[in-house]
Image 1 (tube, one colour):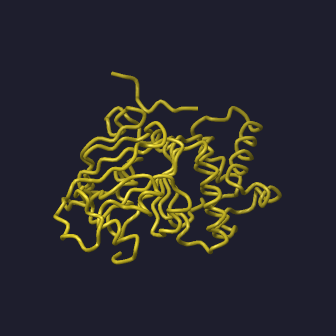
Image 2 (cartoon, helix red, strand yellow):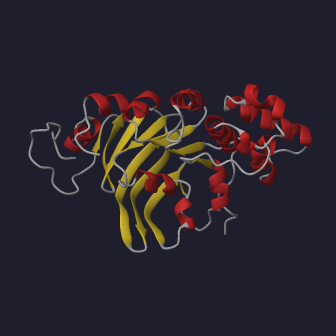
Image 3 (cartoon, one colour):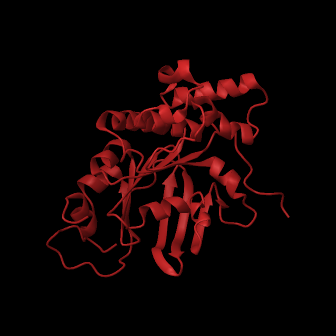
Length: 288
């Protein structure tokens, strides 16, 4: 089911060698290969300012549908800032300003006619630290479908909750305790509950901001397996500091540095044959 977002109308060339010359300031972005699928989100010259201080500079990037796109780069390079532009989370930050254009299915998400609440139903968000509501497991998942009117009856709502928990790989672990507090689950289970909550409103895009950074290796493996399954249905964008994770879960990778998009392309190409010197330096651990 799609929501109607709108209210009624009214690079440096050949810079891959570490021994090459110093990289000049703000070189052109290096793009390799065409997107794997149709473009779901198109960002054009997107800049972000916080109280007048610029955090992101003229980012142009296509995000393909039904694909996992990883955003990598050092801390403070603008990855999470860019992620938040795609569901207008920056609107909630006093003094934040976004310029440029971001289109989803060809529509400008920053247009005045766009309802941010409906946009965030289409573009779900999973944060670094699991943040289940202080409600039961059932109510965590049922909350979104209920307020958006996606279930006409209790039985329909039950079906939505069950289907969402199954997609999130959590149903078998919680089916007998749906009315227990969501906060009583383990960290990895809480993160899968949050993912179930996000997909319960039938989004088209799922944004993930370091979703495994607070989890142990076993829970991380389960989340990564879930991401791989979910990409068959959703456009997924994930911010991660783990190069290994980006290589495992994504098909496209975009490297950010100092608020700028440096290079983007197929993940295999980025990790095995980067075309920009700073990308090579980062993925080989020379900085970051």
